[in-house]
Length: 162
Image (cartoon, helix red, strand yellow):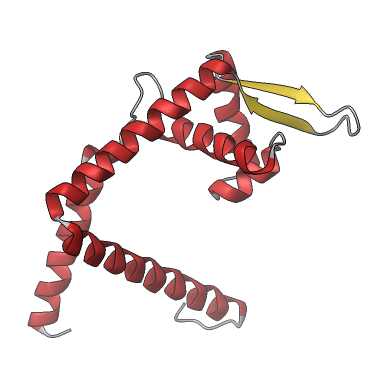
């Protein structure tokens, strides 16, 4: 790799590392972890759109985490009184998950805090740079997603370089 490209790569790497250390993604509601907030917001949005209770498998698919991970998070949220689980009367193996009133309040406050933070960033950057940032971050996501898909395809075909 030429020196100029290495310097650019190091600059991007430093920027990603700084971003990772920034506290923008920390909990917006005292006592809840970011993963718990994501789960509450997932349930809130799903119930709002579909008017039916969520299943662990649906949450797992939406959040791209394993069912055991979702189950552990749900146990904590249930202990805090933020969610309720109810066995489906038609399928005793299925459990429906909804927010309690307290869970609804926490999810609403978290969403409001998140959007206030993002709106603050838009004010700080301005409309043009905010649009550029969104476009660039989307391109970064697509790049890494395509790269991972290529790596997986290569692994399926037995390529050694993957």
